[in-house]
Length: 120
Image (cartoon, rainbow, N blue to C red; front, top):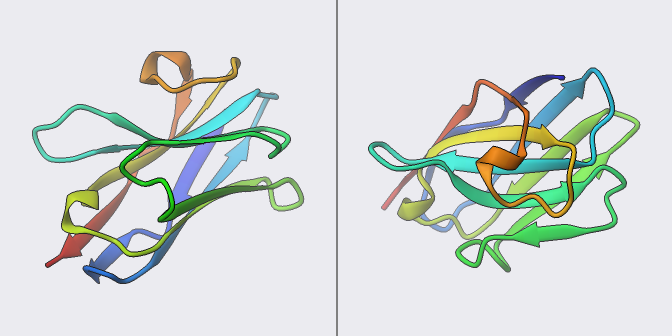
């Protein structure tokens, strides 16, 4: 599956940003967002089933981020609100064949990532 992220940028704390991921290729069960801060490990942010029915969020973003799925556009989006400096990192979208899927090892295809920087 070919994945392409867009929508990253530089914002100030408290502002919002929307990321999108376009997926092309074979079918999958789950789509997820992960992020990686400089020197850090890739961490789970949010995931959604291909149908859009089920969602999971990391505790650190629960209530601030919303993941959604648009089949007509073949995209997954991440609406990020009340951003904090600790949300800074490269955000990756990925697809997997299992649900639930909260670990990087459970995803088999990845995008190139998009940078999100939140200044204080």
